[in-house]
Image (cartoon, rainbow, N blue to C red; front, side, top):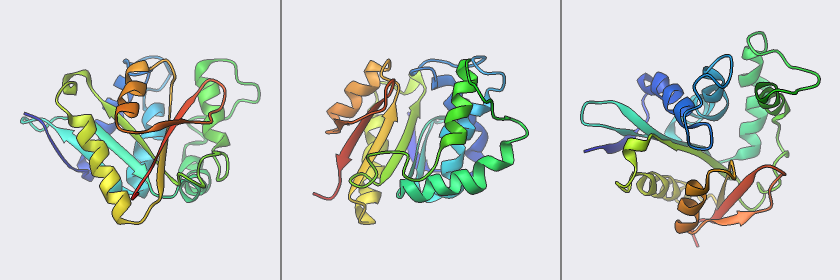
Length: 200
């Protein structure tokens, strides 16, 4: 039986693993990039570095982490921190490319382009999240429990709304978010965003 608990710093390596194993529209992205850690450096680990109090994991009885949710309660402040403090430490490891062509180069262009104000939904939905669950967690209600845990904490903090972005090819995730009462938001080409109003 798996359970949910708050994130601990010792979970960091597991976040990298779960992230890459679910990064390709919910499927395993191992080997897609030259460095598998790129996924986690963009979509998981910076959140627990900045907001460890907005992160929870799914842990098995044998103490394996098989899922997580991470978030920020202020997207624009987070993106300023990502741009100014987090991402520069990886510039030598992942140099920018002037004319990105490959999937990895386009992902790096996204990384270098992250900044406050880049997302159109932050005024009404200032928080955002990333959630990833390995296949063995499915059907146990753990994803819903993770989301409700985050919703409750953000509501307690007085945050008025939450959004997320996803790969539109991940139709299972889209259905999951809609079952939780999230609604589609205006999105950039090639992406899909959902939002929910909190505390109403």
